[in-house]
Image (cartoon, rainbow, N blue to C red; front, side, top):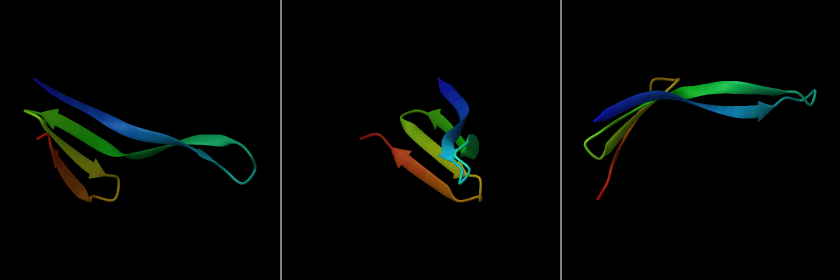
Length: 48
């Protein structure tokens, strides 16, 4: 089973309003999670 989704986070701006910011995408398969940041940086996490 695999799953792919996006990661976003609310950010409070100087004027007090909030905005959702896209941080990247993640993909889960076989106990591993690959996170690809919006800047292209990749991080692979493995479940032990």
